[in-house]
Image 1 (cartoon, each protein chain N blue to C red):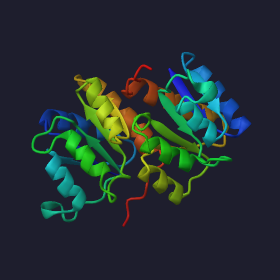
Image 2 (cartoon, rainbow over the protein chains, first blue to last red):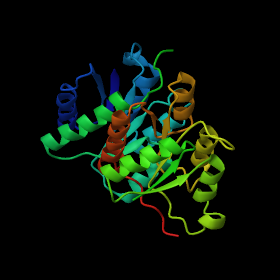
Image 3 (cartoon, rainbow over the protein chains, first blue to last red):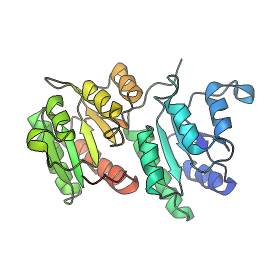
Image 4 (cartoon, rainbow over the protein chains, first blue to last red):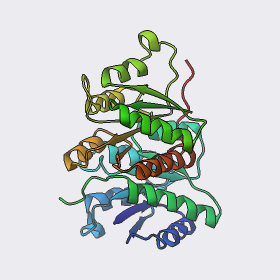
Length: 141
Length: 142
């Protein structure tokens, strides 16, 4: 399974990488560090010309260039990508961020913990629900 | 916490309500049996005028009167309802149903298991993830 992680903090990206490496299912984590690159990945532009269509997108909100909110709006506003489950994974606990994301069709909103083992737990839960339990739309085509 | 269960099968209603009672006694489940009732509830019409806005909606697809597909479309097109996480819970594993649901902004799509234990496990997972891990939007007070 292919997951697109949109995360600008290298430490958090490493944490996620580490946590997903413990998945029972084979997961390939594709990491981009800003919203513009995320959109290029989805559109298979430039260096991403051979990018796979992800089964799941994990999206931070605090991103340079194109913000997480803007990126979410672009993903969910595009008929080609809107059906890709998009999980907001962010440090923000602001009510306005939570509301904004659900109003703009984020599939769910998960708060990023700061400690490693808590992060690992969150990833395990995201994994078990989104890559285990939930039925996902096909990625071919 | 309030969950709106939109489900026409009495057996599945009972299974879901009991499984949630075991998984999380603090959850209050409101049951409506078809899409028309679901929309009346969500729009706080008639007997539902004081109904609390649910924190989560579990939505079956195949129902009489108005089916889940229509309900989903109505919820996600409504400015005040669209933010409510809406999880499809259905017997169907048809690709067309899965794609249709996500395209219409279902938050998640789960297939109802046939075995009792699996059904209880599924409800436990829904409770753990959607009511404990996930941040849900605050409901605007009436």
